[in-house]
Length: 529
Image (tube, rainbow, N blue to C red):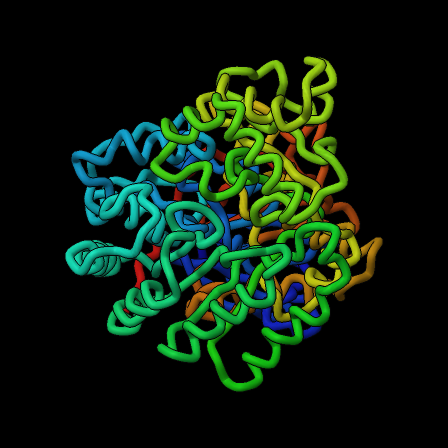
């Protein structure tokens, strides 16, 4: 007897093929059968009439390693139908942590993981101690974290001994099951690495059969060069490269999506193992300090805070921004498009723009930014509307671009319900499968589902997830295609998506009738060479 029968749904299997009406049988954590009309006995039957039955959705680029230990139920993601999250992105991972660098990493990640405890750990111990969660998890090790462990926040090439130590830490993480290496070349200390440093690490990845994902060096005025740098890693080493949250930031770069997608498509056409992901929003989020010139953070947060307190340094920052725009974000219309998301020390200002704060305080906008960072000890996180909706829709509507929220798993109560974070934590996948299919008509429903299931699984090299077929793991999502939608907004982000009725992870029901059952059947998926 099977454990479960999902009866009468419209099956869209994740391959991009049209859907068909069928019953799906589940047993021992896997898909036992998919039949037009099943006569198999099951302990439980889920009525899926009028609904779509799909593979569990894959969020290929997230930072939920900052929140899953605090909120293992992963409500904001599982309620959208997400059953697998890829964490440790943008060069940021919470392991490994050497004994004398715990405080440095805690301080470095203060704007991203303010509530997460940090302690000395190897990557192997981190993997072993990762908590049971509602979703499956793929762990990556971050290049920025490895550089912090070896050279700190110093802006210089690595010594030979440091490069060797970094390679050893990477190899240890890969042996422990890390899927691969992520980089954050847009910000310190990742931006201090040249292409040769990344290629040396990519050769370690190749020996282990591992992958490379990158928040590229620039997403604004030099985005084309940055994309080509990432492609060059695949070309030189054969390692699979995932370009993170593809975008064109800054008003001077709007309208360039087709050209940028063409470069990546050409690389794929040459047979290179290159993929990319995107989220369906025109607004990004980042630590506020990352908008300032990179020299501001050289030497770490204390050095940054000292600089921001000096009038002559603010004059230099102001001049750099006037010449070049915001680091990694380009030129913006004004500080009114930058709003506070989370402020540990000034929570009353969450939701306000920096322009509004400057006017309330009757100071220059740049002074307001610097004063805010000083009061928050550098830990402020912001939202910045820096993309054009046309580019967002062009990128999102490209069938081979996968889907990554670039966001944490959150909840409407508890420690992860603080502040006004980006609504993409609650809405990315529901927004794609709902409004972007129904209203914008950017993609057919099978094509949209393929982006966030089969295409994502293929990019990760997962052969037994991301599609509904006999023998694959029973990660399954059931939703109403006429109702699925995001509800989270920038003013009121802590709102769950609607329309998902049932979610299975490894064959266990996590969402039942739209409600979380509390079970935590997710697993850490370890890379195999």
